[in-house]
Amino acid sequence: MKKPVPPESHEIMNHIFGPVPSRRLGRSLGIDVIPAKTCSFDCIYCESGPTTHLSVKRENFFDPAEVLRQLDEFFRRSPRGADTITFSSAGEPSLYLQLGELIRQIKKKYRETPLALLTNGSLLWDDAVRKDLLEADIVVPSLDAATPGTFSKINRPHPSLRLDEVIEGIRAFRKDYRGRLHLEIMLVSDVNDSPEELSALAREAGDIDADVIELNTVARPPAIDGTRGLPEDRMRCAASFFPQNKTSIIGTFREDISRFGDEDLAARILQTIERRPCTIRELSASLGVAEELLKAESIRLRDSDKLIMLDFGGKFFLCPPSRTGCES
Ligand code: SF4
Image (cartoon, rainbow, N blue to C red; front, side, top):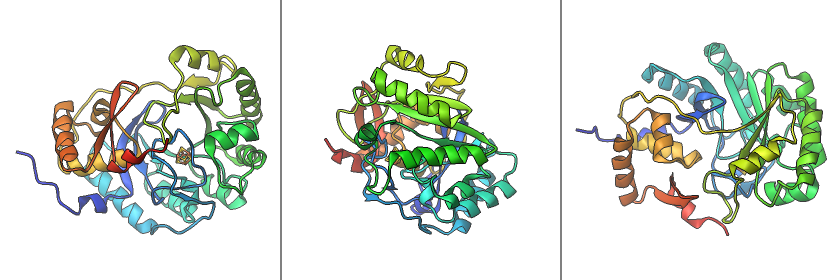
């Protein structure tokens, strides 16, 4: 018989989610330090839905001690741990003012586990932000546009942000940073996939001199209806514009499933899909729980209006109920 879900468990672990399957980062334990959805961009492809608080102001959103407490609790309860600890939010993590301090404390305590940070790169022009990120092992800034028009169209940035300053910030960070820099480029059909855009992006990516260039595309329900990803053959064609020795196309992660246990299952499902819509198969790989069990629990959650199932590209994604209001 399933254990009842403690009503408070969703709040208790509100800064930790996953581990989420990631081809580049393995089983990646997510850390979220940003209130949803606070971001300096409002990307048309965002899987977390439209930005509700468009901001470039860094703030003390949460107490770092509480985030650390939740991290400790995860490692205490999960003998398999995680391959990577990853700052990844439904928003932009570098907007968290105490990010540098929190990174230092996590590295001190969990030295053996690589620490990654996914960022839209928009605040790297700021010396303080660049300094905060120096101790991370892997930093993954994104760059989806090489021209101001495409930047506005795809990222819909805060009005104070200029593309040339954003790119200059990423370059400046590369100069000082000793860890691995992965540049992620999200390709959207008919927005930034023309030969001209790809050539310009490849030039900027070359100047930035990232260790790896990762080409991604829309594979989950986007913020704006009608935003479409590229099929595999066009992704391969796009990849040919970039240096072959360091460019990869982000693929589907697969991992043997082994159970973590099914206590607090409802809370873990909700915490995971709040940041990133997932299929049942992805959730199964992420949470280490059999698909059948997840299906049954998801139907129960759907019937009690705690999640919805959205059809995108012929796959069903579990999403928070707020996603019913996708912009079009
Ligand atoms: S994709 Fe990232 S940068 Fe873009 S709106 Fe979503 S959270 Fe912000």
